[in-house]
Length: 100
Image (cartoon, rainbow, N blue to C red; front, side, top):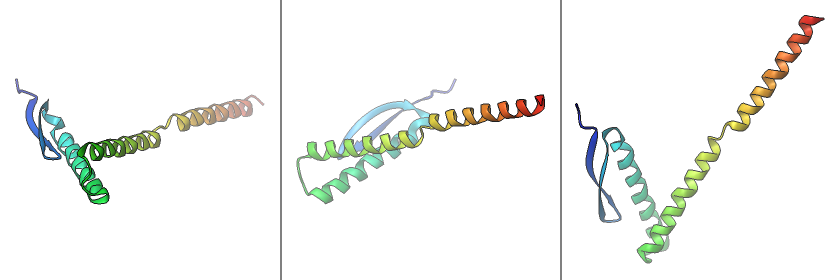
């Protein structure tokens, strides 16, 4: 049986974090670390060398904000409900036409 776990080191803002992850998730973890480091560097350039805690807080906020925007964009429940209503209306209309 193949071992599905993988030990990797993720480097964020110069600090190394060892993680045990599923092998199929490695690319996603490395991409996430890259995104965090790019955002940290963006804020360092924008705000200068402030306390790293402030930079990390702004990075976390920026990524959380992006995440909420994606969640809102992917919320299709409104459209699904509207399509169901439309489908019901069409079905009712067709039933009425067949009865008469």
